[in-house]
Amino acid sequence: MDVRVRFAPSPTGYLHVGGARTALFDWLFARKVNGKFVLRIEDTDVERSTKESEISIIEDLKWCNLNWDEGPDIGGPYGPYRQTERIQMKIYDPYAHKLIDLGKAYYALYSQNDQKEIVEKFSSHEKALEYRSEGKSVTVNFKIPEGKTLFHDIAKGEMEFDNSTFDDIVIVKSNGYPTYNFAVVVDDHLMKITHVVRGEDHLTNTPKQIMMYRALGWELPEFMHIPLILGPDRTPLSKRHGATSVNYFRSYGIINVAFMNYLALLGWNVNEEVFNPFEKVESFDLDSLSNKPAVFDYTKVEWINGQHIRTMPIEEVIKEFKGWALAEDEEALKWFDNSDYSKSVFEICRQKVNTLKVLDEFAKPFFRDLPISKEALEVLKRKDLEEILSKVHEMIDGIEDWSVEKIEQSLRTTSIEGLTKKELFQILRATLLGQIVTPGLFETIYVLGKKRTLERIEKARNQSNV
Image (cartoon, rainbow, N blue to C red; front, side, top):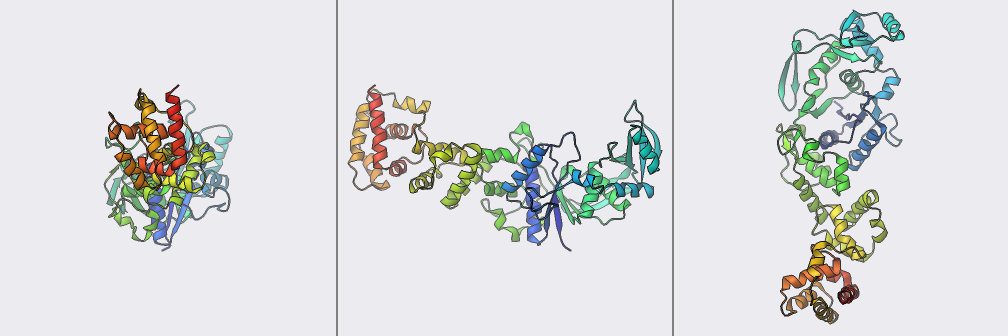
């Protein structure tokens, strides 16, 4: 069997982290078995769907490195299937008509005064056209069959639903657009989807869709409903818990491989915490996914991101930073370059940060003067500051072997009356970078170099005399 899976978001907002996780699992499964990963935009909700949301979702998927394999315009800028385009191609109409002809669906004429009241049920296609031409509200409704709907779920095992708990389902709205449950069935069948992997919030939709599959005489795909991602209060992750969109984590400075690493941990039983999920395709299996809900931990996302920032090649960190800065802080691209100095700055700064955003904040003072932080100003409010900086200037100027080790040795052996080493180091951090939380002080001085370090000390010393 040629495995085919799909990710089918609705463009009514940003890509949710839960959707990104589902897409990741679909993608990993497809790659593991040399199958196909299909992207389908389900935009039949014309009132809420927007092109902006579609573009955002697609860009987020690209950022996640979840490339899809086919589409009507795969060579173009986007390349997914879109249900609105398929509606224009009249793809869904024949199957609605077939269900009516089989007696498994019917046209419903609704009262003009009460859009929930059906005043007539009929099966004539001509009458439906006539009523619609008169501006009357006519839908196509699927008849719920008697009995029970049973199916096997890869995650949950054998499932059973009593059909009597469902009302007849509208499958074509009065505007001629198919509803979600009907369009999904037709698309999944025509696209030869073999496995439907999605969140368990869709579980109640599945029996309705299976009824339609069977009414049309079509073979069922395999279904798998994975537990939802929860917030700290163990309710489905939503905006009340904090940011939930992939776009937010991009702008916050999370690296894509680290983000996908964390999403993979939310359900995939892996024997390690920090890894590249795209390099673990061969070890992925749907059976290895947990059937227990996972709690989203914002602190853990940052921690994993920091691990990747510190261990990936510095050239990759710089590439990631440039991509982030282009979208979030173009000013950074004016001071950053690929010089050895820039690389050295990033090398020491990445040891102390967990996001590209904080990396930006840590690196900026190495390249240009910035407003001194309130905390740094407090540290520099000393009557003896000029005297302290004069002694440090003399000490730094006297270092001949410019190395981290020699700088540390010189600073630790420098004694200034009435000043602890901690106080001295804080004064130097504030003087050199305008902050009191910085990369390692000795490494900072080494990377700045003797000339730049002495210039900054001299400038601060002169200002202390004003």
